[in-house]
Length: 359
Ligand SMILES: Cc1cc2nc3c(=O)[nH]c(=O)nc-3n(C[C@H](O)[C@H](O)[C@H](O)COP(=O)(O)O)c2cc1C
Image 1 (tube, rainbow, N blue to C red):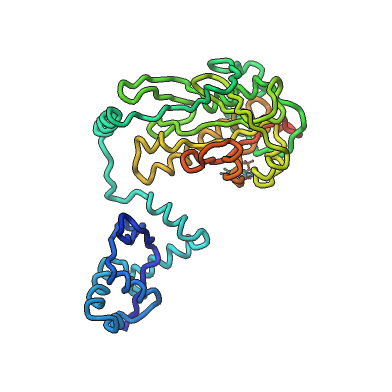
Image 2 (cartoon, rainbow, N blue to C red):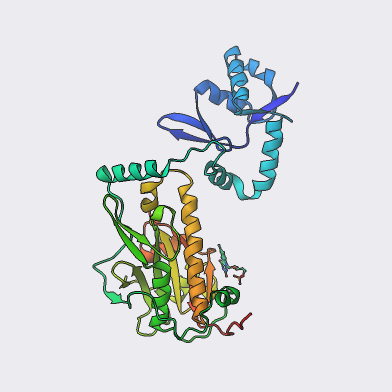
């Protein structure tokens, strides 16, 4: 007699008093009765289906239904084979990563709104639930205004797109020379300032930047930890794209604290300035309640950080983007709420020890 077991690709959680089985691969959710829960516990190990009779005929009937719905899996069945294949591919990353990926995967029958439906939906929503601000600001903090508009690249050593793309390398060896405030300014303006602004009648200000942003929600914020920048005291700043400058947050970290916060990576702690990216989740969540939206925020980090890397390369500076940092410590340094505005990564920028030769 074939054996059955609880499927390996489900997650259990409590929702309003119900224990829910979330089959994240097929994206189906079932509320489990107490009897079903007993059946699941019974089949935590491979057992013959008939053994459910030992619980009660009612439990046996439930086991049959759970097998039909795929909560229980028959050994060597196509479902079992598919699960084993998925597990062998994803196992080292544990259930959380599988859950995150597959729950946010779009299926063949995923429904998308028509463009007009989407526009109507969020314009109506904005009436009773105003959209969050497109950018953050700390108006009570001292502001260093930065030159507005498109930076002047006349003196940059690389101005050709292909030259810049082919010259970019993650750079981890820096001199101790300071970087000019103009260079820092160009990097944060190009990475984070609006290139175009739209006053949407319902939604309010919408920003368009050099990087694409899902639904133009621009969830990313840039903080800058300054070590060696001309005319800027060391410490933590926030780049306020609408105010057009750096807000001095009045926070500093010792060299050891900074090193710990960047995961012990010396080249990040010793750079001239460190860009720290966070995401204000509410901006994206306001428009997209789909589980996929979180992926979009991470994708946006890739765009913005690449823009920062390429801008630094064009200016002849060295830079490296890193994610093996200690989010919690960086969030503490910034003073942001890691639940609502988590840290996503950093880019260190400085004068490179060995200037990259053209390729
Ligand atoms: C998402 C991501 C995370 C990274 N994290 C780190 C990191 O924590 N520390 C580091 O020194 N480099 C980090 N890097 C840089 C990579 O090591 C680097 O891109 C890779 O070695 C290829 O070299 P290249 O950038 O010169 O092409 C990261 C790169 C990416 C895209």
